[in-house]
Amino acid sequence: MFCTECGKEIEAGTIFCPNCGRKVEGSVTISSRNASGVKPSKLISPMKVLITAIVIVIIIVGILIMRGPFLQGCGSSKSQFLGKWREVGKTEVMEFFNDGRVSITDKGMTAAGSWAVLDDGRVKIKANLLGMTVVGIGTLKGDTLRINISGEISEYKKIPS
Image (cartoon, rainbow, N blue to C red):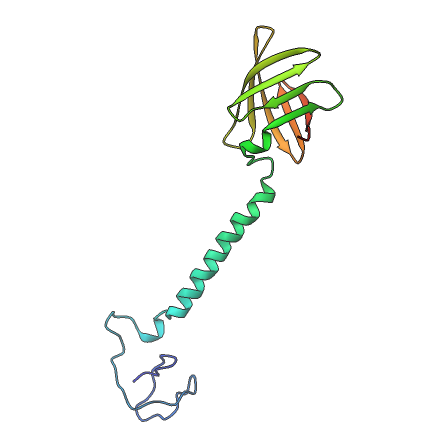
């Protein structure tokens, strides 16, 4: 027969389980294997399964919450780029519009183009400057937008609206 508390095999006529100390209720005898063919001591309790599932969910939620700060600048959303940005120490102003247009103004001249957020959170900017198409890739780190055009990096700060 087996202990109803811990599942260990005990001798018939035993009053207390020698393993866990629980009082043996009656003398129920079962085979050494249950209907599924598994020894009772090898069964996983539903409570252990529930606790394991809860721990896994907590870990996944924690990972999703923590990835935000670590990916700042890598997982940028479109709304973070919207608005006007001024080149640090210079006069150029770049404005990102919600419809994907970009306007670049410097010393009375304006260039138009388009922009999109790439899968990795960077921004790709295409503009027509004096008949030439220029492509830049930008990354956002905090309040600074760094744009790389042919190896030349320009930094921009957001202009408060």
